[in-house]
Amino acid sequence: MLDIKLVREKPDIIRQDLEKRGATEKMQLLEHVITWDEEWRAELQLVEDIRRKRNELTKEVASLKKAGQDVKAKVDEAARLPLEIEKAEKEVDALKEKITRGLMRLPNILHESVPIGASDADNVEVKRWGEPKVPSFELMPHGEFMEHLGVADFERARKVAGAGFFYLKGPLALMDIAIVQFAFDYLVKKGYTPVLPPYMLRREAYEGVVDLGDFESMMYKIEGEDLYLIATSEHPIGAMYQGEIIDEDLLPMKFAGYSTNFRKEIGAHGVDTKGLFRIHQFNKVEQFVFCRPEDSWQMHEELLSNAEALFQQLNLPYRVVNVCTGDIGTIAAKKYDIEAWFPRTKSYGEVVSCSNCTDYQARRLNIRSGKVGGEKRFLHTLNSTAIATSRALRAIFENYQRADGSLEVPPVLRPYMGDIETIAPKSQAASKK
Image (cartoon, rainbow, N blue to C red):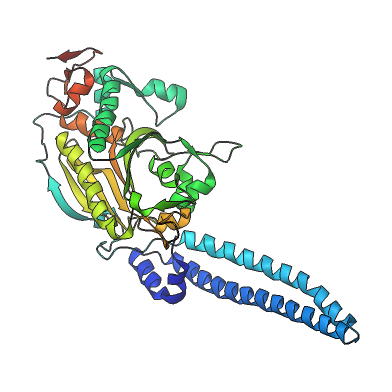
C-alpha cells in the first residue's frame, strides 16, 4: 500500500498517477483518505488533550485536598474523562481502519517508464527474439492435437470436474514435469532457493500480496474456513515473512517457487475452448525476490532475463512488452510481459508476467529490513513467472507440431523425459534415440 506520508505531503503525485492509469474512480477514494487522515490526527490530538486535562485535574484535586478545600466538582469532572477518552480512542481506531483500507485500495505509484494506454493493445513492444514460424500445413488446435496424440483427455475431466480441467497422460505428463525440473535446474544454478509453498492462504496474508477487491472474484474460497486456494506461488512466498524484519545483509533473497495454481478465470470460446491456455488449474514455476530498494530495478531486469533464457532454450520465439497504465493492475510499479509466438493464430500471447512491486506489498505485509539497533525500512518485492507449464505446452504443441501429425519434443526437455524425441499420433508410446 502507499505511504501515508505521501498522501499527506504530496497528494498531487497520487492524483497524477491515477490520471495516468485512467483510474478516475479512485480519485474520490484518495480524497476520502486525505479527509480521514485529517480527522484521525485531530481525534488523536483530542485524546492527548483529554489525557492532559485528566493529569491536570489530578494535580488540582491533590492541591485542593492539601489546602482543605472542597474537591467534589473537580472529582466529578475528572470522573467523566475516562468515558470521553474511551469514546475518542474508538473513533481513532475506526478512522485508522478506514485509512488503512483506503490505502490498500489505492494502486502503487507507477515508474516513469510505464507507457500510457487504455488496454493491452497499448502495451509497447521492447524487443523480439527468434523467427516466428509459419508452417506450410494447417495446424491443429493444441487441445485437439493433444487428444489426437492420446496424451490429454478434456472430456473425461469435464465429466468429473467441469470445464477448465484436464487429464495429462503418458509423455505429456512427463513433459509437464520436465518443464518444471528444467526451470528449477536453471534457477537453482542462478542462486535461487527452491520453495514448495502452502497451497492455501488465510485472508490476512492474501490481502498483503493482492488487492482482494480486484482479485477475489478469481479465487477459490474454502467453505467454512479462513482459507483460499492460491492462484500462484508468488502469494505464499511473498507472505512468508509477514510482520518480520529481515537482516539487510541477507538481501537479496531470491526464490524459485513451484505450485499448482487455482483460478476461476477460464478462456473464451474459440482457440481456448479446449486446451491449456486459460484454465482453472495449472502448474507454474515462479520467481520471487526480496531486495533493497536501490537494487530492485536491476533485479527486475534479471527476472526478465531468466524467463527469456528459458524460452530461448526451448527455442520458442517471443516478444517482450512494457505493460501500459491501463493494463498493469494495482500492485506493480512496472511490469513486463513475455508473449510467445503462436503460429496457428499467427499472433503473440502472454506466457510470462514480470513485475516490480517496489515497497507496495512490503507495506501491506509489514516486512522491513535493517540491522539490530539500526534504522528499519520497507524492502522491495518483485515477482516473475519463470514458466507456466500449461502455456508453455500450448506454445510447444503449436511450434513443434509436424506435418505427419506427430510432435517433436524440444531437445532441452528430452533428458528429463527418458530421451523421448517424438510423440506419435494415437499412441502413448513415443520414439527415442
